[in-house]
Image (cartoon, rainbow, N blue to C red):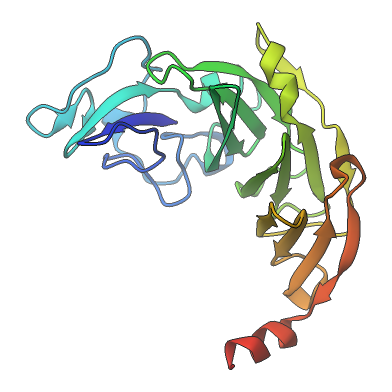
Length: 244
């Protein structure tokens, strides 16, 4: 995970103009089941970079190609999951959550969801990991994370994953790397591709699940720890709306 400063604005972004970003791998070089994915050899042994912003000079910020971007920090996949022995460092999704002036990155990985405090983007702190729901199937990198109030909702294309629900307030008092457990588990679908949440109405719309013929799966999250099924908009319904 790279944290970047974009000029003339200063911001935290998951977008990078760098030479090792893959379409579905925001964490850089990986291993394990994805070890045959093409990588540049010079990118394979990178270590986390914290504590010192690296300016973009002559088209490079440290080891990364750049254009008008300063590299504020970089966290390897291994450091994101706390050095688990599984060997899967790849990740594909990044979402954010803020409370009381503090900022957190929620990073979807093969092994689970990593939580990183980025309030000080030059000195990010990995708070811990919520392990993936289906630990018998490591074939799929996909995670999708959204938030409502102080809860994270996590889905995956892994079979029988369902939707993990995690109370983000638990991050506020963490002082050492923590192996987290979920607070609730929604099981009315198994795999899913994406989750959209309407924060005004407290409804989640799950896209590409193994229910509703691949259409929208509605979930009432007004009580996040007791989310309930709210119906389907079947694939034909979606196609009809597209046609106007």
